[in-house]
Image (cartoon, rainbow, N blue to C red; front, side):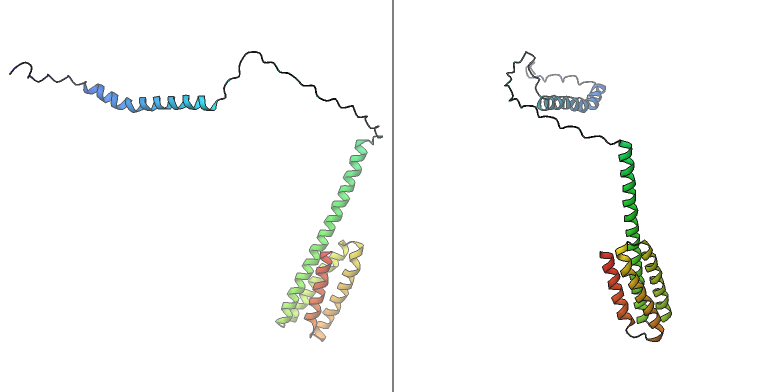
Length: 194
């Protein structure tokens, strides 16, 4: 065997300890390098370029001048406390009237619902239940009459009289009472819609 044909001696392998360190640290090092490259690329992409630091000359074009408008003469001032108190009182009165109107409408709706209950009781021939429902509707109408405004008091009073007549006729002539109750109910609903 000649020295040219002799196999080369194998290179000494890295110590096992260093290979293990490279295997553990290698992925972290690659991740660090890739993230730095990505950060640098994004930094240059998204940040605006700095403006030149040298002096810049701007030529201003004169704006057209507008003649000043005369100021209106000031009105005599009302003390703010009086204005605020009057406004608050007026607002409170408006809110109280609106509250009374809404409560009256709610009571009228309650009367319409109890009239529906009376009609269904009449269809079952339960006259005692119909009488109780009519009394409840009458009480709701009485409360609505007290809370309503003047233009509604007349129609509500007429409906109250019709309810009393219907209740009186319930024990004597029950035929046709359900039809009359539906008419009263329609009148109540038209009052609510006003």
